[in-house]
Amino acid sequence: MALQQPPGLLGIQTNMAATVPPDVSKALSAGGPPPAGLSPEEKHAWDQLDDFYKNGLGYANEMALRPQTLYAIADSPVGLAGWILDHDIRSYQMIARVFDGKPEGLSRDDVLDNITLYWVTNTAISSARLYWDTAHNLPAGGFFDARGVKLPVGVSAFAEEIYQAPKSWSEKAYVNLIHYNKFPKGTHFAAWEQPAIFASEMRASFKSLRKPA
Image (cartoon, rainbow, N blue to C red; front, top):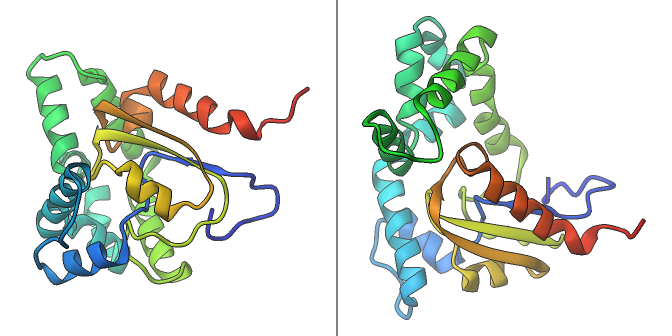
């Protein structure tokens, strides 16, 4: 949306920020070492991204290239559950802790209700097409590459997101960064798992854009 800039869009708030600098993106794509001079926060983000690109990107590539070949997951609730649960390693580990009885942002029922919603509405495949549409209808670039967004942007960086966007990268990626906050907990599905924090962040991000009554 921020790249398309439709009329009326005043700004965005994101917890999966696209902030990765070109030199970092190039090194990740090539499987090379990290660029020199990364701060500890940036090196942590590099380590998270390096692991994702090497071990966790397969599902996204499949949905971007051949979403319709995943039709089998619409024929098996167990297959659908396996596909959804194995999205990214930190979310998977969080859900595993939930089923081991440890308190997290989600309950067992939350996890099962989410899978059931996809099943009874038969939307597993149609939701996967988002990846195909993004790959074919937006300018070329990696999932997390800085894209030159000019609109006001708020960033919420959760610790267990695919990568926790550093403030330094966010400031460079978004020339109109209006809000940045980071949290020690929260995965890729922060709006689902940590709704109170997520809603608070939305309010904080858009506070400066709201017109007085």
